[in-house]
Figure 1 (cartoon, rainbow, N blue to C red):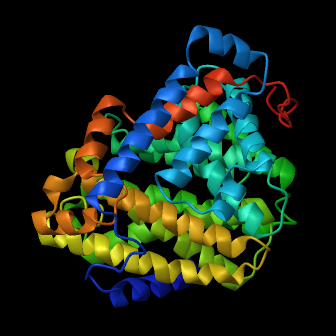
Figure 2 (figure 1 turned 180 degrees about the vertical axis):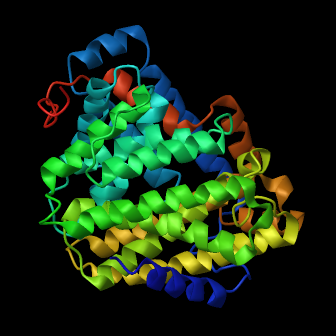
Length: 417
């Protein structure tokens, strides 16, 4: 079996050694710079909205939407958020763009009722797996396992995170899903379960259970961690150490499974590195979801923290993440270091944005200090957020509303019947 406890203890030591003081960031943005970037961002948003008018949509449907959308998107990432040209070459390459389109239309084919929001939720994991493909020198593409694992999130996560569903029902679902993951045929009790069982079959068609036992061990590990995380909604009796262990295992095993479903085989050094990357992403999610977790009475490491304690937690997360991502240097593909830097830049940008959106939860002096490292004023970020539920999701929807599935690589047609 995979040494999950060993990896968890390793990164718990990282966490305990990570300081709580404010990290050093690469760049301070003056008020003048922020205002210029905000104007530039507004101009880009207007261009994106212009792409949505009826006459332009007709033109786009008869051409490549990316030829209009991606130069604008690239300008925003570089001119507003300071992503470097070599980083943008990766994430805006034809490979990454085509994979995103492939996933979107295959998701629509798999479940025509699936909303763009839920497809976006799955696509976030596709991008993680595409990054791992790049770092391991695999083709950046949608394989059956990349598709299946990313599609599991919109079904299982939403069910397990739904406060309207009782813990008893969730545990019963979890037990049925566990049996199916172990290769036992189970009668699904709902449409969501039926879809999950079909997705499990995609793993089996790509990776035999006898030839790739670690692939399935990684799936058992994330399933066990997800099931254990149900205890966080009834966390009165859990110690801080238990909550931390559960949160770390949930994040670490998730990306460990990403890695195994990409590669089939991994050495222990790469297993550990992927586990740490997953813990960092989980801490990011918990910071972003602090208010929602508190409303749902879900006890993450930071859900009920405020003021100095929450600020210290954020600082500790950034220090931890930088150290954890250093272990990703064990991947030695040509662009692996560029992609690692891109990941850290993206995560830290999202953490700073989250502080701006929830500034009242932090000490005023902390929010003021960390705002110096944001390319946009926090007031502006809150204003844009109120105007749109998520500007990332909005741009995602605009692109795929415009795009046409002319070259979609449907490797699933026979599997989706």
